[in-house]
Image (cartoon, rainbow, N blue to C red; front, side, top):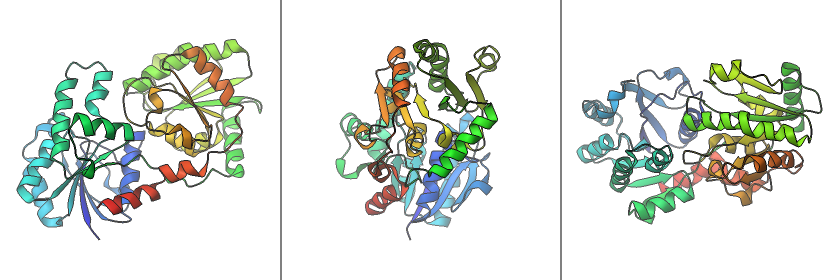
Length: 369
């Protein structure tokens, strides 16, 4: 069994947000086929690392990104563990990984979650070109490059002058392999009706995210102030909007006068909401990469409506008509699409699970390594 040493530049255990869950789930599945060791920040909860070993040696301070002493600490771990590969999440600690590669001869894997330079361009950061230049340099030094979408891979091949022979699309994966049972869905619907006093005929709309992230917060404000009022004006039924996730602004909650909008906040079991809702909305118009929450929602057989930017990386042809994509910021059309989505009765097809299942993704990684 080959061994991989993974380097994560931020806290991800316990896995609470979509990004944290993405990394933890990926590692748990990777550990079924490879011996896995992870180097992370000191504030990770090691008891949550199931199937792999953690070394918490990186500071939680922003200074960890320029801490040259980490080279010696991780080199000692490499000498002790003798991994075949060093894999980094994102390019930020690329300088550290490249230094370790040159010192130890270890092969380097760079796993990209977005084209980070373009993501920060979209967020109007003046230094995005500097990051993009650095990002390209890191990818060129890698022995293997993973990109989260075909679009990111295609862009990187040209913009970063990478070889297609060592550049692969390794998308976000889910553990679901089939649609939830009717029993599970009915139980979840009953749970939501009882908890929030919904009527049986209400169409339950769900949106979730970590709202300390600006694109998610802007999407939420747009949803509450523009899209949902448009939906109510259409008078096409009874709609209830449930918003789940941490860091919903207090003023948004306090100023909410609409009884049809429920700010549930952080919930311990998002699966109950994904199983019980009728329509999932993804009004994201910023950022890059694949939106894991949309993949999860489709995996739970939810009918979904997304702005175009929010649907990047999800092939619409494998969704069986379950995903309606609307041009960015067209709130009127988005509201109409929610009504349309509420009438979809088909199930998500097997092709979706074949594309996004962790099992299929791991088969590809095994072939690569």
